[in-house]
Image (cartoon, rainbow, N blue to C red; front, top):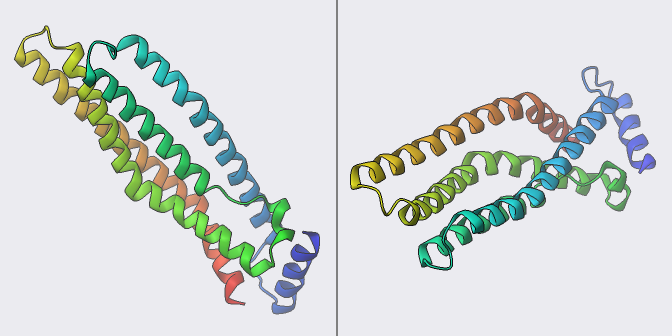
Length: 192
């Protein structure tokens, strides 16, 4: 790995790239790698906790809709975990397994996938969770009057979409500040 990094450093030094800071790039990528690892652990931990909680709250044994709600939540969360794992950066320490060009392209692809997940897949996830909660509410709120049920469904849906929208906007701003410079630096490395 150090040979690859030394080669990249020598190449940049020979090109006299004033604004490129390889140690800083490596540190940024390591921070992102650590954050992704924490996010994955949290997601893997929260999925069974959520499903178990819903299994106690929803009447899944008496109602097919309760079971469907739990299954949708579990599938949605598992899908997000899978996307997160798929977009996880390769360890900088593993870079010696790749020639530098392949390693850099792999990292770029994963960083770009993070943007795709944020822009497209998180909206789909919000729709799945909203659908699952509304299906669960069909069972739980059945004894209440129709206006209360409709208000609860609309309120829950608006709440979920508001939270998702705020989360997506914050993450997009964060990604623009943290990931975009790394993507640009890696693209410059590939062009060489």
